Amino acid sequence: MQGVKILGQSPTLETMFVVENVVHEAPIYVPELNAIIASPLDPNTLSQIIIHLDPTPPKISDFTPDPPIYAVNGGRYFKGTVYWAVAGGSVTLNSTRIEQAPGIYTLDPITRKTKAILNNYFGQRFNSPDDLVIDSSGDIFFTDPWYGSKLNVTQDAPVLHQQTYRFRPSTGAVNIVEASIGIPNGIALSPDERTLYISDTSVTNFTDADPNVIPRYTWGATAGKSLYAFDTVDSPAGKYLINKRPIWYPEELVVDGLHVARNGYLVGASGFGVDILSQWGELLVKVQTDFIVNNVQFVGKDLWLFGQGKIARIRWNLEGLKGARG
Image 1 (cartoon, helix red, strand yellow):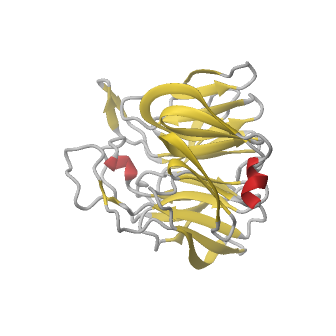
Image 2 (cartoon, helix red, strand yellow):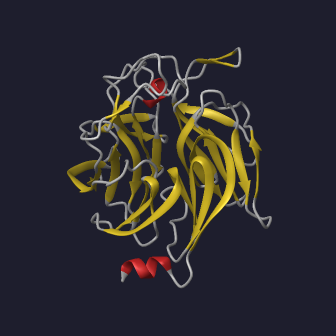
Image 3 (cartoon, helix red, strand yellow):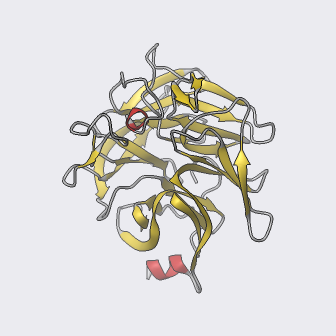
């Protein structure tokens, strides 16, 4: 019955754009522009893309901020600003040297101005921030796996453990909040902010991969790939996490991009489709696609799917949260 309510009277799944066969990540809806900004996570691409939703049908074009930001992997919109988790670091792109530190960056979507607001942990470079979520106080929670070097978007070797951080822009404080998940990836916060979700993508095995073949990881079918829930507890330093528990084990690939609907349901990009879960990890609906979905973004009751080679749109009866958690 819950699945029927999610789908509504006449659900549709439509391919909106056929794009270059690279992974598209970090889709973020910007209400001031009525547009979605997304990023090709590709070693040879510098600019982002923007999907303008006002025209019928929507139009897609390149989007280049000032200064440009290379290899954005995740992000959210919060109070007029786009916050990016940037995996890209020092690389040579089309004979041009890029010197950039992985970290958390901001984008003014109107002026297109960007700046780094966090690019190190007490002097040590982050590995390659993957995804982030922002609570109502403005604190940023972000995952920092090793994917940047494994996907060749940074030539700097990892120097930190793969873990999850809380960054408080109001004070500049950055703290570890979770360090037990093998490879932390997608991250989301419940509407009441009492639960934080983090996905594990340890099935991407970094240990036994050929260092000369990109991506520099293999598939370990029996490794961890659960989605975990944590209770949040308020403190003077910000929320910390307790009561770690697995709530979902995707049957196909992994939960990559992760968002929360207005009613608290979880929506995870999980291989050739999207899994819709209750907040307790019950599978309510599985939408199957003909391309690998890496990330999703709500625009009201539309869910946009981003992945390899295609961008699609679901129209149904499930509505996303507004702002940094949606």
